[in-house]
Length: 421
Image (tube, rainbow, N blue to C red; front, top):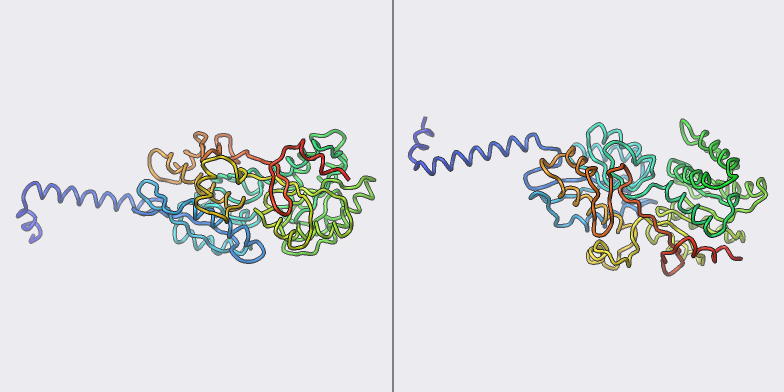
């Protein structure tokens, strides 16, 4: 009653403005009450789960740096982007623990998570909660779930590209081999090996051996996979690699042909140790690695420290660091001398996320975000992103040659010299 009398003491225009302001406040409160988790009137919060310590920290630290640089000071529909990065040490159990904590605090999306096994564990939780998974650094098996928008081509595609490059350089079908991690990461490499070999004549007996290996992994990774085909395995989290080496030597004896082109799907440290061991054994093998094995410049650094002077063929899923593209200009400005292929990928993923958000018409919801992502192709600083036909968003795959001091983008026709004795 008292409030009512006070209200009518104000002038009619003031009363109208007061009522309008109250109505607007109530409308905003109602809207925010039903808003997506991670959204407030001023912020849009996203989460990321990465190894920031431990054996795989090189991935997490670099991708985190790139994501943070891409999102720093950016806004969407008047909201500032906030990135919360949780450390899971690359362990699936820890991934679920920190993932649930992030979900409890509220995130609009997960951005740039690292790891194949960790992603496989987390995806059912993200799918059940309708949380987009954007730009994860993971193998293809984990990369095609509902709600996932992967930037990078999967590991199998990278391996198939390396096989094609080897064929172009003159490698015979029976002389391709691989050294891989004994888990879903390595199995993605085997799928790529099968794909690459299936395009070549008279490779069915080799593919049958690879199928046998894959069949033995059903229901869990079998530790006794060595000695069955042109593949050497090492156990995830271990550095013991002699069994994998002996597996390739056994294949050479069985097949009557030496390995000439050895594809690496391994952690950088293990790959460096394996190359060093093979060189110690005077193996003439040419090594070809996928982008995750190279890990920016990590593998090259480890080889330098080991005193191993070798040229290494590798796939890369981001543009060359000296490419004349707007995204490279922005990344150089933001990351300076620390720029490498790993943090560049994080930077591109962050800008890809922003580009999709800013292309949205209508409400800022997860459903609308995913629909927008799949509605049309995007240009992200000169990098084409297209989810209209599904994952991955980028089809960019470069061939490079690494030595101790530099990385050079090449074509398959440039590689034949590496095969000369």
